[in-house]
Length: 368
Image (cartoon, rainbow, N blue to C red):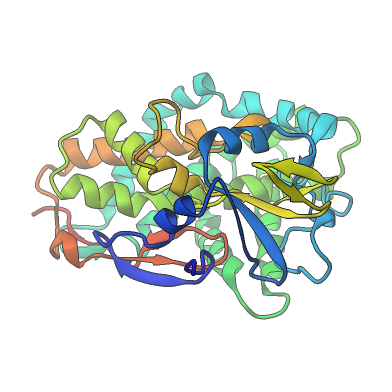
């Protein structure tokens, strides 16, 4: 019997994941019980995954989800966004975002982002600090607010709102989204210069103020979540003595511990055959990013950490630069930094559903 791939769990950082090998052994497309009822299908093989991620018959609009599913974004009709649209509408929206987050634009911010990492780590002092209790969240949010042109005195409010995104109380997530969207609007006030105003000016004609604020919310929350989940694994690896180059360290960390173990939900728009299995219209489909990345049989080549196809993560360049900045600053400015507990005692928690895995704590002495 397969282990539940959506069950929350905690295990040691060196303990093997029991789910990934079991899913791979079950075949390239595995039927499982979905968290909100009914069946879902998980893709475990790379070639099939890339086909699925580019197949126009498999869409992201939550309107296609089975009846009764509630833990999803609003539908594309209710809230058009990069994560709910497909086809030409998605292409137009992506064209507005992509130039602002291109490799060239992001690399031009390298010194600025390294400076943020240096300042935040320096402010933590020399005593033992838990880098998962503040730094892992504050660093990417500081970078994002700075780049978007949002005043940094709103940082604490942004940290609080991002943490409340996982609030189980009815309406809690909606309130957190509204809070982030409201603070994002501070980047649009007169005389502000940042990516927020650039995005406003790049969006398709007729984009509403509400939709603009949601796009900014999505950039802030997704950008924070992506880097936050990876920082702990990156730093623990580095301070455990990994001597790889910074680029290799970041690449291997993201391969083994991608920010999201699965893609966001996709749904078949028609009946179709995948890997010899006939799926009905409206079938929920996921790609097991972590399982495919860590498959011992995987051929050399790009990983699926940031997806593939039309929905390849628009913020991938920024996330990678942020991680390189943290690793570089630790090596150059804090050469005596060390883990305050043995590496093997670190614990990682999978939050359940399709959410990510992060370290429960990361106690570090930055000055030895």
